[in-house]
Amino acid sequence: NGVPDEGTDVTIKGDVTLNGNGYAYGVTFDGGTLTIQNGGTLVIGEGGITDATIENLHIDGDGILAIAPGVDLKIKATIDYVAKYAGKKIDAPETPTDVDQLYWEQMTVPTIEETKLTLPEVTSVFNTWDITKAWQKVANPETEVKDPFKGYFLTNFSAYLDDSEKAGTPKIRDTKYTFSGVLTGSQINPFGFNREGFTFFGNSCLAPMSIPELLMDLNKDDIQATIYVYQPLQGSYHTINMATVGRGGRPVEINKLQGFFIYAYKKTNVAPTYQDVIWNPLLAKQTMGKAPHKAAMAIQSEISTSATMTITSAMGWTDDVVLFEGANFTNEFDQNYDAQKMNGKHINMYVPGTQNMAVYAVADLE
Image (cartoon, rainbow, N blue to C red; front, side):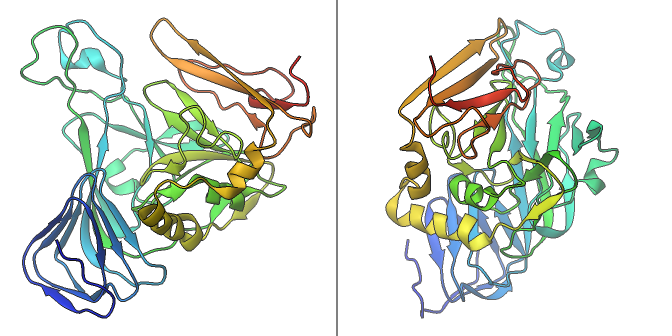
């Protein structure tokens, strides 16, 4: 269970499995396989790998790898992405095809060179977002799904039943997608917006991305400082800005390989920094736990009253609208507080207007 400190050199010749948290400084890998299991986190500091001769770095679905900014790490890697069953109760389906189109997940690819995607033994349709034509099917996902920080939408799975399930609610196996290639280190590609509207991105880093830190980078006149993260089980989008982050079940992080939308008012770009958005928040989390973000706390302190209205369909899909009241809010669009609606596939709730609003802040709710 020992962890080498800075200034300590360690050579590892065999296989290593990590299922907790670990830090690497001055470590030389000489063959073998390094596996980061579900729930495991490996943090590689400056000088963390002196000789990247790992023949196979295997990162399970929820495993995390964080690399210090500027560390040039190139190792052969396989990274699993596990798509979860996102459907509702189905009574005794006759065949596996009776549960088609129940997976709806938005994801991206890891930052590895010469990416190769291995598909599971189910029918998978990958889609990309075209701002003028909406979703466009990727013809050959195993070779075309390869652009880091670009979002992809997984739909129309032919899920299959667990062999032991005879009747009742089906037990659907999770489906695993495996990416392989050469891991290239720690940077975030600039987010480019080609025109006004929603653009689809993803967190291609192998560690969580801090939403408050990313929102601070997005807080500019030509971008709406809001993140839209799809909820497969609800069939709608989490609308997350500084006023809603961490509230009402909304996340404070974008998980690794998670896709998300951002709205821009015109052609522009933003360049989040890896150190601010990934590295520093992860180190703070490792040492202090889930500490509240000061900028988000300051913005949320302006809210005097809040209300959330939720609707649920007969099929169990849910959506909500968040209302805020505060003395400094206006009837115009208030950046960091207001957020327009992004429609989901199954159910949508909003405050109607020139822009349909998912989060609506006013001086007086009455």
